[in-house]
Length: 137
Length: 336
Image (cartoon, rainbow over all chains, first blue to last red):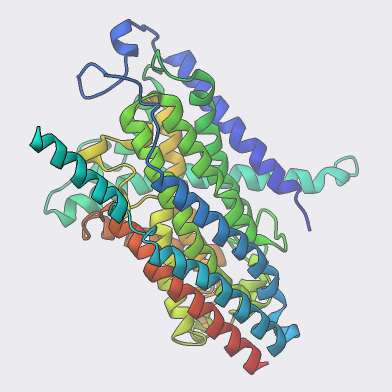
């Protein structure tokens, strides 16, 4: 067990980036102007802030990821010791995985794994209602 | 010499580190050149031909020099602190992976007993760096790219981790060197050919998912040039951009090298009579072979849509990985 070299790698990685950026600073020209520092949007003037509220889809994916990532955490020690633990450990883990698969099946059935999630029935009904009122007027 | 005796480990580690850095630089320069040549020839073009004479071999060196002389632009509206920090995280995540790659039986940064686990953990830094870069740029392209990249990379981390569990199961250890040593004695002992077809399936899933991990085609929607210009690093220029680029190519090598280590016998020769050829040549050769497959796929397959991407990960790779894991576990238990 020797984590010294790994620590060295982490430090060195930071050092390399620092040196590279320092060289860049020394060698490159620095002539900023407002046009150059404006946000790049293929030549268009940027409209509004990009720091907007994001689709909840991303958060759902992050949550599902968290569940399964924690599970993988439990799987690693099991995988290392399975040979010595034998059949009992295998059955235990099979039960654990089946329980988690129920979770996966639930998200699947809830259509949260689909990127373009169709609106729920209530929302669709509400949308139909509002478009109806607009056409009535 | 006695004065240096207590520091011998440190000195050796530093020498090894410098060697790895040189290797990474040469690999990146070579891989960028190869990428251009391979893509050119696949499309019936020639690619760079002028710089340096023979088939434009020094094109990427010239590009690197150009990048170091380029002005470093930080947009006025950007979050300057995070904007500067992001390349550090991405590069640390990439280089730290090299610390546990076994180039030969005595050539490894540190043979820690959690090698496989460490790689999965440390490469997650890249996701944070990318998200940070996209957010700090305060640019719509960059933020879309970063959000997509984060969603994709965390999703595919699960199939990657589950497939890497297969060799861990068979070896009963997470140490990279022990996993390689267990695959000695000819290619039929490599883990990819053990417990057929399960480990073969694991290898295929790992390779596909690792393409998504490093944002390569067909999983390159975070950078999709035709819609997002360049994705999360659209506002980066000069050396900061070069650092992202270097880290990306470093990651390409790391994921290929892990596949070579845990599935393809690492530094072992495919036949025992070829053992006289040194280990690093086999190891780098196998890894470069997989890198070439990555380049080849880029010009063969179209980019997946984001919904297809999630479909493949959660509905195909994940159930298959779980089934695979349990079956290999059973195989291991019954074999004793």
